[in-house]
Image (cartoon, rainbow, N blue to C red; front, side, top):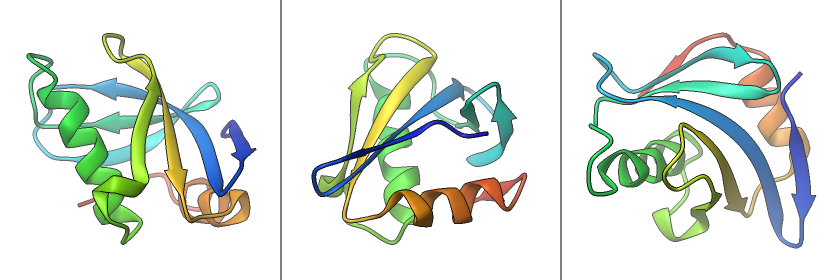
Amino acid sequence: MLWVQEVPGGVRFKIRVQPRASKNEVCGLLDDALKVRLTAPPVDGEANGACQAFFAKTLSLPKSQVRLVAGETSRTKTVEVIGVSKEQILKLFDSKQTSSV
């Protein structure tokens, strides 16, 4: 099951990023983290920016409400999203194996 932690005003959850993929998508769970494929390369923060933009678009939120709080140089990252609940995240990402944008 996806690890989601409630924080003041939002939630944090773990992701595992695969850069240089053919498209941006959530392709299931890996242990307690969402497995996310991104087209951006892991160079000069491009994949981190793509990750922020992907979750903002997927959740219909401004990019300013999505940020990486851990794992800036790692494939395993923690994402913080302001303005959503734990239930919303679990419903959106636990209910479907693949979500592409």
